[in-house]
Image (cartoon, rainbow, N blue to C red; front, side, top):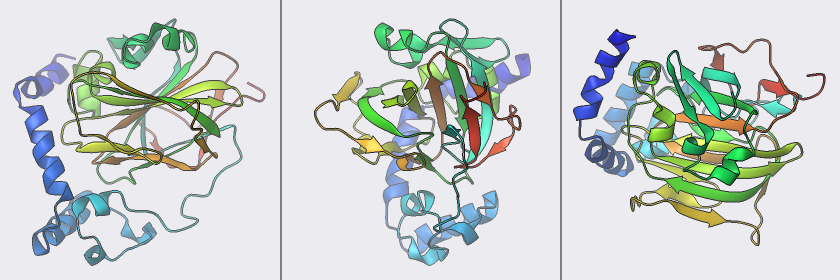
Length: 284
């Protein structure tokens, strides 16, 4: 829509990388009373539910990053019985079949699997005609990312890019948003074939981290970086934590061709929680 394009125009002009670097430093700082004031304001402003946090006392978080990536109490996210579980708390942006190699972003916008995966044509071919889910994490949400199914890590790719916001208005107004922004591509092998979790950065997202590597960015060298894990296997169970955002963003999940039935409760804009049913291959 023209109104969405106008709404995102200032983002083309803002110094997004500088703002993100400054925000990252501020979020990592242990600023005592100033940090506590920011955390209290954030909780009140966004309605963060601290009752489900493993540590509900705001004074226990010495930095904003430690608050933002807080753990939940044991049992706060029970795992349902499904082939694929929701990997994040947030909202569904879009989901469905990949049309050839094109992923639907919003009305009038799509992008290619190859572009999302940093230009790797061979890797992209494995998901042509497959399935995708784009999941948005808002500021109030729990920001750790979990495994939708059990998987063995094969590759991790850090793709440099822009740092547009990833909120719904920006998704409608910026063409190819998720294939333009900085992102971390994690390729796994699962029981039903390969699958990919793409952690997409955004304005003010200071960094992204995985459980096997730690913080991936910064640094931001401006070139694609890749790690392979064939000789250093990393295996994660369904529901296990695989990564986190230091300030929020979006996850894009790619699945290969084959029968798949998304949960009937799923619809664009609907809220989601870690561990709830996402899809089944049985009876699809």
